[in-house]
Image 1 (cartoon, rainbow, N blue to C red):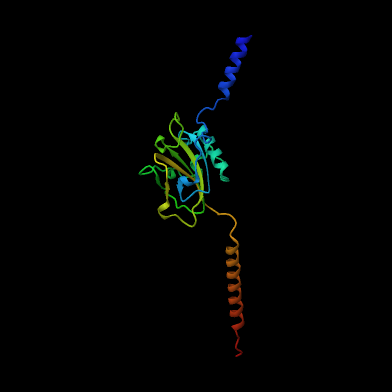
Image 2: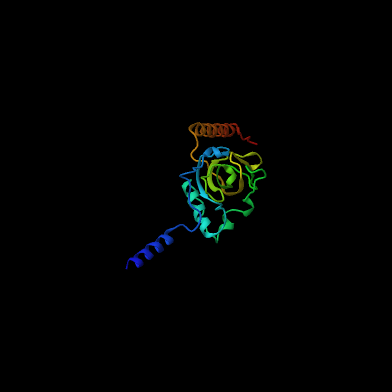
Length: 199
């Protein structure tokens, strides 16, 4: 009877164990300062490279993006290539620069895999780690270029860009209202000047 109970416990432990990458953020938390422009938020690292279209990697990607407030379509193997163009998966030229094929603007979500050369992962971590970042690219980023302070970068994925950057500042609202007022006043003046001649 004891053997059966022991065997059942071992089986349950094996089933409960994660199939692939383990979240290692507790021992190697990512930093918003790892990328330039500076991120608003980041989440990771996941052990190894989870930037693929297979089902188990997509679960880690979805979790990382959700932690950053991503509201785009759910990631699945079926719609992987429809959510973003696969040409956006970039390999850096020198280990810490990424030039994306699409212009970056507004709220942007990316994932970056760093190899062991990054120097931030615990001893014994295999294949480096993957982190996810959210940042505001503003109106545009020159040459669509993102740089990282971590060496050993191997690939990156652009999930979304060009999203609205939230509620405008009060000064922005004031300028917009003033602008509408000036346009309205100019239109009224133009109407007043129109005259008709009686022939």
